[in-house]
Length: 358
Image 1 (cartoon, rainbow, N blue to C red):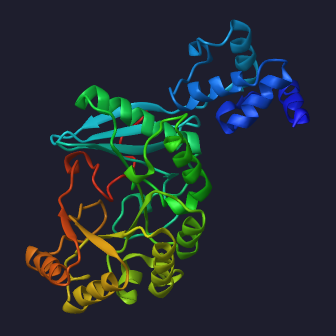
Image 2 (cartoon, rainbow, N blue to C red; image 1 turned 180 degrees about the vertical axis):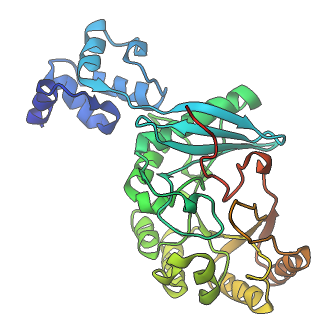
Image 3 (cartoon, one colour; image 1 turned 90 degrees about the vertical axis):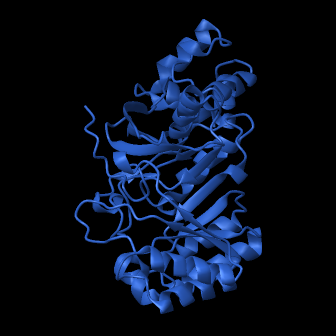
């Protein structure tokens, strides 16, 4: 460990300080002849207060601040552009340290504010109804870049709605489970009582369905909620709209969800869009009801949000009502969610970096 810190001191290139754990920060100060609690103080400045400048760490001596500045840097995001919807939704163009851009969305209601967070630049998957899928996946976001989105939207929530952020959903750009380690590391910082201290019960991770990693989350004893972007409980239909499902068939997905529930006892949320000519048959409705009877779950039927280059259309209200009636009859909780932020392309499936960031 001491060799690690000697190497930091000898190298001319500054290290990203937020890549260090609390224990590593403490070890760094000990290696410099300082008390270990200085590392804990720095950790709190970085992860509890969200500070991006060593000079603002006012309970450190000037000597220690200069030491940090000489050997470390803080690679933070910047909100370069912000759009506000008529319904109060805010979409942020988030510029990363390497000038790549992702989008995040703050969604207000009368009782809460929810941060919709991105986990990748682009996306690893190929859902035909999602604008992000049309973008090339450039890279995964680091844990601190995910965390920074949450901090920024917490500040926006306090500024525009006079209350702190209440909920977080990993439903922005990218497939969170394809960035597993960084997403879980970010959630650890968000929920750490020495960092943001948010309850994991207020966090939901939404996945298109990667069975192996759903099982891994259960094994890792995560405390947050799970949502699955389902859209069809019939394999042949799901493959048409989500081609990657050929590699991750429904049979394996269902088994992983049963495993999840057996280990976590947490109900699963199925996200479901009804499209004209795609999933509006009686067989589609019956298949969804059958799946929900098998796994403790609830259903969010989501309004479809059109994207450029797609001919897909929202299913008619009669079909949506048939879904709701069938699920209700089977005593399965179902909600029809109308979109927020459609006028600024901030709704589900619409995030595609259309904002021109300089």
